Amino acid sequence: MPHRVRVWDLPTRLFHWLLAICVVALVVTAKVGGNATAWHARLGLAVLALLLFRLVWGFIGGRWSRFRSFVYAPATLKSYLAGRAHPDHLVGHNPIGAGSVFAMLAVLLAQAATGLFTDDDAGFTGPLNPFVSTARGLALTSYHRSVGQWLVLALVALHIAAIVFYERRKRQALVRPMITGDKELAHPAPSARDDAASRTVAAAVALACAGLVSWIARLG
Image 1 (cartoon, rainbow, N blue to C red):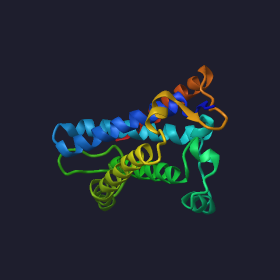
Image 2 (image 1 turned 180 degrees about the vertical axis):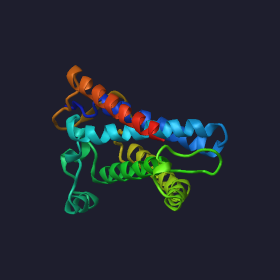
Image 3 (image 1 turned 180 degrees about the horizontal axis):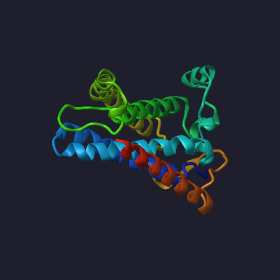
Image 4 (image 1 turned 90 degrees about the horizontal axis):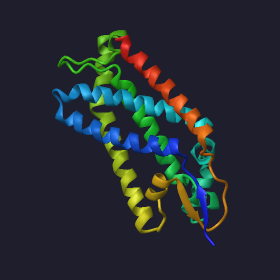
């Protein structure tokens, strides 16, 4: 008999889809340039706020959204790759998915942070550009427009490929649970907390992160 388990709380799901939309829009506005640069900057600030929220939520969010639920030792990854998966690997992030999550967070944080210091020589400068030397600003701009951009695109492509692989080859639903929040499991597992109180806390954290990013944006 299948067990329905709440895996992804509403704040985590909203974060995931808002981040996906913003990343796609960032890629589009970066390629368009011109007047779209202003929107690129706004979207970058939105992504920074979302990432800060996820960092906090990784410690106080629902059970399967907390970092401690998907920080795996190398031996665990080795066992998973050898086909000896733990039942919990089918609930939240498995060892491979966990690595993808941490890599995505790190790369997007680096991209958003360097965007604060950019100077594109076309009339746009990041809000924190005046606080670094010209050489440092140009170095960060170079990373943001080249290495960082390609890292983001590569990780997004790998993320999509992994979803397709798990959905079609392993018959593991990944997209639907990120929409509904629930997974159908063959074994019982603890559900993530996802009630009005936790959602209120999430809203407060999101507002605090947005306020911090807004303050940073006004520094320049």
